[in-house]
Image (tube, rainbow, N blue to C red):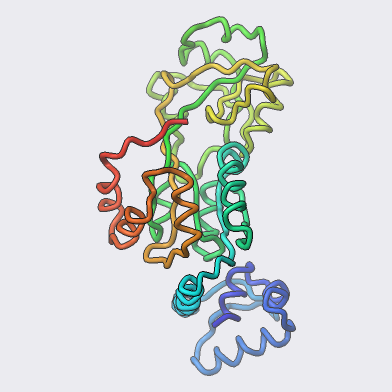
Length: 319
């Protein structure tokens, strides 16, 4: 089981899988071939000795193998919690904005409380985070929107935020109290990389106003966006919490909450997952409404609609 999981989670790279398992490449190849012979079908398609893709039958086997491994790990985790063992690991897949501007203080406090827990931060787009979750490489996913990419996760609303415009000091937009979309459309725009899962709310806002924005540059990283704003290449549109008063003192931030809709950032984990004590405490450090009782209830719910109803009367914090 562990051989299949390692190969699937390392891009079908047998060498990387062998390194992860602290064994030899021929040993991994042999175990996979023995399993295929026993089952009577191929789990992986090949070109020569290279694994090229997972077969449809193989995908079913791997999904079941991952479930078995997760349950086995869950049994071990129950034992650790009962013994008061506060050692372990927590892998988080999130965006640059969350990792850079939102999580640091929470992680500092968490590490102070649980020094024996190894934290792994993996940054990416929503699509990349969804792939990490699909491959079981992360415990928690933290993202904004794109809920349809995470059908197997329980998604808990965390906080709300809006966008800000960032411009060099003295820019004409800085003289306006509430810049309009028309005024903004007169300048090149530098903003986040658009999701491939559908139009972004930014695109939708301009389209509804009958405007065609000049999106000159897109990037995943708010710091990169601000760098190009400083070079005079356009007006930046970033998450409001990605503006640091001291570090960005050379820029002017303009509230854009009247131009674009408010967003909700959520934290998700695999539905039915056994949450260690330190995982539950991490969630509670994110926001008071993510207390153990509420998270446990959400984890037992079968549908996203039920989870959403659980939080419909909760006033989410605004950043």
